[in-house]
Image (cartoon, rainbow over all chains, first blue to last red; front, side):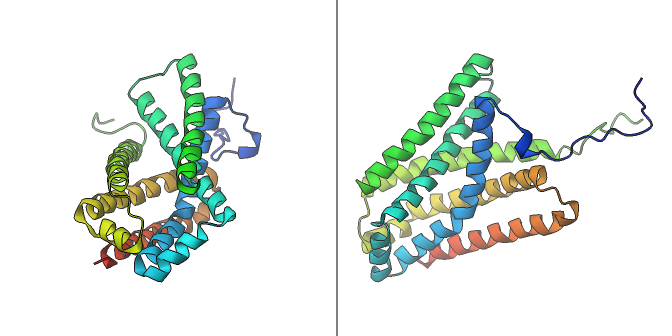
Length: 130
Length: 117
């Protein structure tokens, strides 16, 4: 019988290196990573809007900056994070409403969220830069 | 034990979960509105962008979106940090830091939006 006088050393924090996840779990952790990423890039988005709004020169400078491939790649990354976060978030909202709770449906919607998030980012980037 | 006393937890989680959902829905609704307005107006110069952001039909939903975003980000950042950053003594610093970061973002965004004529 287990000794109940000594509290079990339960893990209080998660060791990310020891976790192997199924697809819905990957969507979930990508939702968290994209969320943190979006918080980190938020000031850059405000800065770009600030510069573009302040003057004609600022607007032209922003337009010129976004002609650079690296800026476009960064924009694509931000859009991917945004759309993945959105799609995975809508999936969570549906699951909260008990839509698609069964394993097969949850796996399918996880794959759909990954695909939709990526495709929306590609389409939006294409509309912006092509 | 008194029947009124809860056995476990302070139930902060439920209200945070509900607020996370509510702010998400607010952001989605505002974003759809703003995307529609953007596609309708297609502001493609500095003057038209300033006019677009300056119109109350854009500025107010954008303001609401940013408020919901900062609140959503605060709840998300807090739960992520409490899950993964394992330094107990660091708790106050990291939570205060995140709060300051988001408050600065909020004030800056408001200043940018209301700086437009």
